Structure formats: structure tokens, C-alpha cells
Image (cartoon, rainbow, N blue to C red):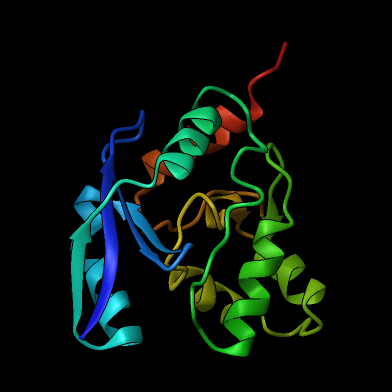
Length: 167
């Protein structure tokens, strides 16, 4: 059994669930997506034990992000597991600047697989670390919002938050 540290953090988009392995974030999801998060953790680690523990630095960074410091999460250590293709996709997602979006096709081209837009979409849907690995910044080829595990309302809110003018 793998022991992971676990915390719940209140945010403007609802309660956020986090899981840590060592010093690296391995899961971030929403309260209403708890079962999805647990399924992804079990698929990766087998049986898991979630031990409650605060991570003050991450909590502070998340609060800074929601207070409009959109770079606060850029250097958070992550360990999402995944295949080589998924890791490449997730790294490309982290390279999308806040306030910008990219299409699945653009991400596929960026990782050297220009015909793999659907595979990028699948990797995006299996992203275990929402917000920090900003899958909400990926849109359809026509620029319209497409699926988001946390729901389109959250995706819309996050994109609006990141697009607000900064002083």
C-alpha cells in the first residue's frame, strides 16, 4: 500500500483535493471529482492510503494563484506518472501561458506528433493534476470550450480568471 499525503483546500471554484508523494504533487482535483481522483491514484499506485497533512507552501501558492498571481503555480513540483506520451502532453500544457489557450492539434504538433490530436485529448482527460497542469487552457480546433473533468463552468471560470486585466 502506498501512503500519500492528502489535503482539502477551499477555493473560488470549490473544495480542491490534493495528494502528495514526497515533495511532489501527484493529484489535484475537485470535491465532486473525488472518485475520479481516487481511480487515477489507484491505477497508478495500486491500493493507497491518504494521510491528512497540510502542505503550507502549496496552499500559499494556490491562494496566490486565486489572488491573481498567475505564475504562482509554475514551479510547483509535480509527479503525475503517466506514459511518455502523457508526460510530454502534460509538459506542453504547463508551457501554455496563463491567459492563453491552445488547441489539441497545436499541442500535438508541439510534442512532435502532429496527427495525434485525439491522443492529446485522451491524455488531457487523464491529467491527474488539474490547474497546475492547466488542461483547462486547451480548446477545440474552432476555439470553443470542450470537455473538462471539473466541468465546463469551472473551465470557463478559470479561463476568465486568467484573462482578467492585471494592475
